Every structure is written in C-alpha cells, then in structure tokens.
Image 1 (cartoon, rainbow, N blue to C red):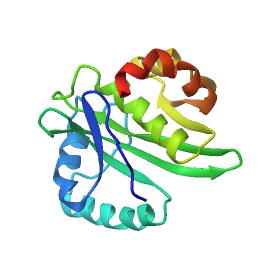
Image 2: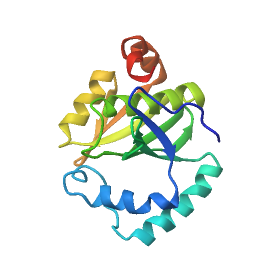
Image 3: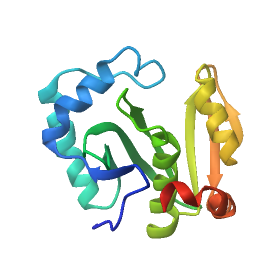
Image 4: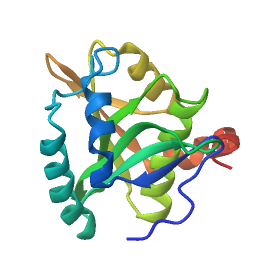
Length: 179
C-alpha cells in the first residue's frame, strides 16, 4: 500500500527497509530505551532477515513498520509498528514504539496521532488494541489522557482499547500536532 502524507508538524514516518536494521538494533539494545519493550537480538543480520520477512507481510497489508524521522533534517529518531490486524471488530495493535534522545519535543504525541490517523482514516480500522508494561506509568498516563480504555491486565501488562470514535472526538484539540 502506498501511504500519502505520513507527516506531522515535526516528524514523519517512512516504511522500514533492510538498511534500517543497524539503527533498529541500536535502539532496541539501548538500556535507556528498552526497559518496557520485548527483548530482541542485537544481531544486525538477524534484524535484516526479520525485516525481509516483514516486507512480505507489508506487501500483503498485514503489518506496517515505520521509521520515525525528524522533518527538519530527516534524522531517524525512532520506530513504530501496526500489526495483529483483526476483523471483528476491525482492530489493530500498535507498538515497537521507541523514540531516542534526538526526538522532537512533540514526537510522542505526533507519532501516536499519526498512527491513529493512518489506521482510522486511511485503513478503516474501528479500534486499536494494545498493551503497556505495568511499570511504564508514563505511557499508561499518556494513553489515558488520549482517552484509551483500560480493559484488563496480567502480572506484566495492562491491556487497552482505543476506539476510532475517541480519536475523532479529540482530533479538534490535537489537530495542531498533525496539521
């Protein structure tokens, strides 16, 4: 699928390529950034192989993995992914959300809003389902401020849904971040 205008005020998304493998490994291996994400190998070739397999899922419109870049200098500052697409209700999960120290001031809110814009406005999803590590209180609070619904949890994670209607309800207030 070709995506149009995956850009917010200070950041943009580009679909991941094999050439991004080293950058992704650096992000995921950084102890300041990987506290609340699933562990992965720092093996660059393994990451390239994973991306090669992922690109088949992208071609089949089953998953989308993006590099987050700054608009001012196109520097790569993070990653974000849409996956686990479900049909009833039409829902998606998002994660692999990492922003490094070079992020813009509003990169977090802009990247979340871009995910929702893409998923709800372009892909026609009705809701998002996702999980957040219980000890990741900052991200929990972030999602609650946007209107996510905490629906369950286990020893490790809290589970949420975010309906498209909530995105459209907050859009007027947050439109300044995505233009």
